[in-house]
Amino acid sequence: MSDGNGDDGSRGPRVSRRQMLSFGAAASFAVGAGGVRGANGQTLPAQPAPPMPEVEIALLAGIEPGAEIIFEYPDSESPAILLRLDGPIEGGVGPDQGIVAYSKLCTHKGCPVNWNAEQEMLICPCHWSSFDPALKGRLIIGQASQSLPQITLRVSGGTVRAVGVDGLIYGRQTNTL
Image (cartoon, rainbow, N blue to C red; front, side, top):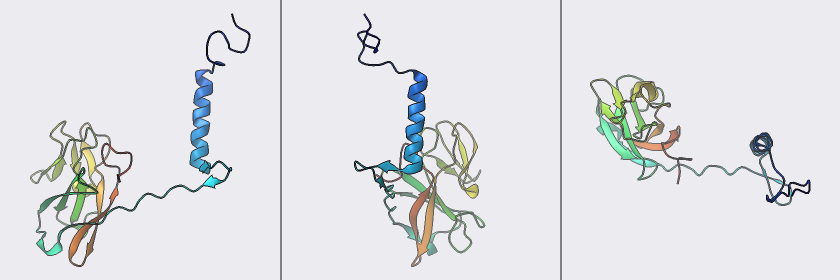
């Protein structure tokens, strides 16, 4: 028997789906717009992302045209590939800005992509998504829905170094562990 307060054997007042969705949307907006509030009501500052590691990849002088170098970035769970292509590439480094690097994990299901020099594409062997490294890793065709994350490179002391990632590496909520 109900007493009018939602106590019909259930554990409290009933909340409609619409009310729950409205509350969720409002809470998300509040967190995004105003930050999180501490116990005393003060807005807590957003925590900055931890700095990305700096990893040496290869000596610039040793990276020949057409080179393909496999490395790990930002950690041992993240295979990456450095390529030296012809001509300047957006985000490229080196004498002709043709040296670029990308995560090897396909953005569709995380299979490692392979460099196909003949087609000049990074191709996923699992579902054939193809990415163009000359166009910032842009998806050209296939099941993936996003471009490959581009590894930010810097030349320092004659060495090419990985210093960051533009895009989210497959399977992660953040690029750092």
